[in-house]
Image (cartoon, rainbow over all chains, first blue to last red):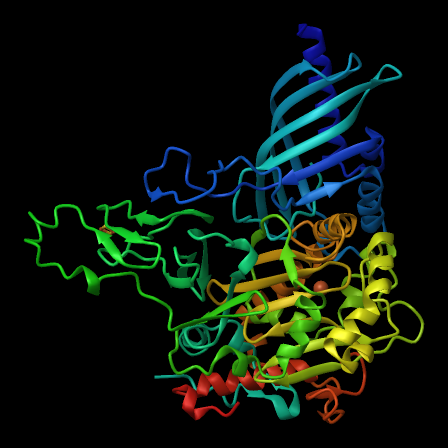
Length: 178
Length: 424
Ligand code: FES
Ligand SMILES: [Fe+2]
């Protein structure tokens, strides 16, 4: 992939991160296509295929990262993302009052061709620091796989799959966006 | 020396001391007298359908391995190697004929028997009595309608007797149709910085908080017209032994707003009344807690969960999403989405709950704050035994009647040395 394309995608992600950190959620929503699927799941703890700790009786072993049919943490559409922002706008979303202060760090960006000529598949890592109220702090760390689609000369997010690396989530809730 | 909790829980006057939510000694006593004694939820049978399927969980703070052995029998054991106490099985779930400890390699069959000890001949001179060093089984394990429970106490009454009249209300969540329920995917696990009793009492009887804690999600359209429709009805019910259920009137819409679910529920309502009896035609159970830490919910999202205690100020939640096994695929999918979007750590309802429970716990660190009891007076004198419902019933949909019953049972168990001292 060309260097300028990579720079372009990185800049897009950094702008997106800034919109989130500045709580400009309505502008953030505009970055998504109407058909977006926004999905996040945590990781499982399983014996690896090669583990000799158990003798397997039946069935196939599954890896920790094999989580497609697990219960996700988020499985959103554009409509429900809009609903989540509308909820915060009511002034009564108590889990975000006082609001989370976030810092989105996006790294390890890799750009690959997408399913169509106007799309890219983009891999990245995220580290989201959240602090809130007096001393609350949490880290949300994981991998992101996006489908970026070129719409009228600008990138839109047409798919986002987020893998959060924790098994038992240590943050008390997931009330921030990624 | 056990703490005398009788002065800390004054259910008659609706006063409860904050000490029970914050003090380490009381917490230790709970582990002994509540968690090492009561029937606790382990998993749903559909999670371990085949011989060898296992699921690891906790009873209180004790790690437990639940496994279906070669004969199809479900057993539950301390997930602890008998040699030096290492955790035996490290995975959350899977399928295995045997488990080998990572420390020195002792191997246990999935029925608990110790079958392999490295160097047993040379180092133990064949003197180790393997049959005495199998995994420690729980005292009793039983299922009710696919829900697997266990107790560490051999003197605990049988599960069916422990559940008592709560069994009918469980049917109204988990056995509404032929085949009962199944769980969707895996489960959500997360840590909440609060005392375990706060979520347990919330699901047991706190209809009151819904209209304020969750108003943002309701206004943003995630809650349907549950409890915001005209003339809402419902009562809080305590069928005994500390178990609690919240209900709404049969005329109320108590289901996620998705059109697929709404149409499905309307269609199957007569079938449910037929199956469960006339009581199902007069009320709809919406949430509840099986004492002490197994809770369930039906409107907005179908979830059941265990509140694992992790010290006085910490709770580890394990939450499942469930559907009627007989429901058509589009209804299952709509329930899966409602389950994920509304409850769980990112759920638009639930994310606000943790925050409140956290502060309700942590302000109790103040010694002066701790001197002042909490108020559980709502509906005092307005709750009485109802013969039709076979439960202590409130006379209004919001009441702390269930809370008082829950804590009364808690206090009885905390005071009793053994089951025989308790009347059910
Ligand atoms: S601790 Fe398990 S084999 Fe030694
Ligand atoms: Fe709640």
